[in-house]
Length: 165
Image (cartoon, rainbow, N blue to C red):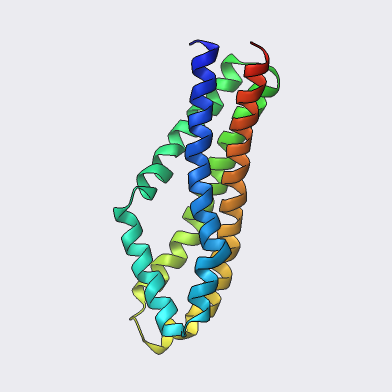
């Protein structure tokens, strides 16, 4: 593969991973604060609806589709490349797979599932809501940082490759 094509591929990958990061940041920055500011039953219901609607959006195929792509790029980099570019691409893969996929699987998704099982408007949902927001945000901050870190690694790797031209 030509270096120019690799650079463009890394730029696209950086933009895609960055868009995932931006979605996570949106929730960390103001969506969850807004939902928490509403009455507990309203916030919990809105989040439960969001958790269902998001599965019919472009976000989920992007989020899931990037898992094998980032892992394969990272593995390929360790096999075929050397120096900082190899480590940056491998690091980006680890950041995305562990910091986004694993964190989602062990943190955010189980919390979403628990919220979804609670009857909307029920006292149990309202009681769980403040704990849900605190815990969910903690996990989401990790996902935000990991995905932004991965996007930065792809960007820096592309710049380093371009400097070699």
